[in-house]
Structure formats: C-alpha cells, structure tokens
Amino acid sequence: MEVVTQQQKSGRGKFITEAKRIMNAIASSKGRKIALLTGLLALLVVTGYLNFTLNQNAIDVGAGTGAQRDMFASFKDGRSDMRTARQLLLQDIIANTGASATARANAEAELLALSQEIVFEDTAEGLIKAQVGFDDVIVSKSGSKLNVIVKTKQQITTEQVTQIMKILATCSGKDRLEPENGDSLFISQM
Image (cartoon, rainbow, N blue to C red; front, side):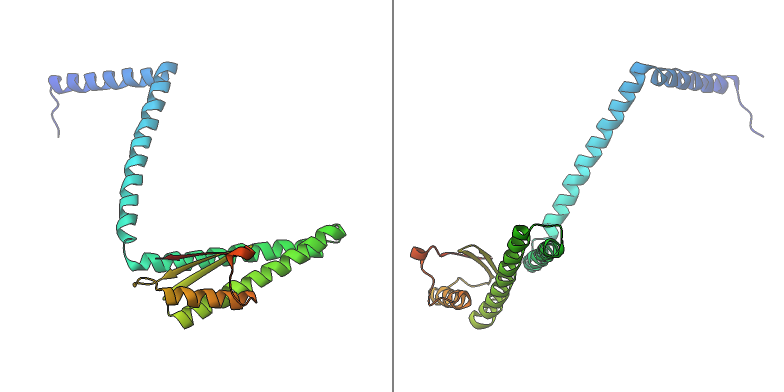
C-alpha cells in the first residue's frame, strides 16, 4: 500500500493545474498557432538534420569506382526507358486513325530516325569498347553533335581519339568526321 503525503498531493495538484493551464492556452486560437509553428519548426530542424546526415552517407558511399559504374549503367537504363516511352508514343500516333496524315507521317519519320539513332549509338559504343579497350562507353548523338564519355584509368591518347573518330565516322556512313560539315565531337574521360 502506498502512502501519499499531503505535500506529494499538492505537488501533483500543481502539476495538474499547470498542465490544464497549458492545455487551455493551446486550445485558444493564439496558442494553437504558436503550437503549430513550434511543431513545424521542430519538423524543419529534424528534416534538415536528416538531409545533411543522409547526404554525407551518400557521398561517402559514392566515392568509389562502383559509383562510376553505376553512373554509366544508370544513364544507359534511363536512356533505354526514355527511348521505349518515345517509341510507344510514336507508335500510338501512327496507329491512331483519328490523327492527321501529316502527324502520322511525322511520327513515322521520327520513329525511323529514333531507330537509326539507337542502332548508331549501340554499335558505336560496342565498337569503341571492343576496339579501343575502354571499360565502359556512352555515345550520345544529337543531330550532328556526338558526345563520347569513356571510363578509363589512363589518360586518353591521340591514337585512341583517332580510333574513336574513325569508328564514329564509319557508324555514321562517312569517310571521316569533319567540323566543316557541321560534325561536332566531344570526348570526355571519367
């Protein structure tokens, strides 16, 4: 059996009275606003702390060479997903009997150009990787602009650049790439 003294009762009573006063203050309009703002401020501080902590962990994890491999794989996966979505959209336009003849013709031309772009990039990437010996390669074609990103530990040599240019020219159906004809090439190393 617990014996409660008068002093303990009065201490509990003060606590209960103070708690009731706080609850009444919160129940008032001004008190609700203050409580809401205090809660939002606390959430903001917690969110900022978690954001900083998780970003630091991501930076530490991404510091190795696995992050580069993931970057190449992520880019290729994203590019593949975008191409598939674009192909489906164009095929829907072509199959839509309600679309105008001009819209369907434009969609067919764009689908053909997309298919040629896919073949060019995939072929060029495979040939550059096999013949020049890079770990991983990304080739991107936009009009007459070509971007090549290679993964290698060594410095890219002039001979390797020449080989890449020959491969890209062959894949383009040209004898060689020429800036005078509007060809633009950018090679980047990771």
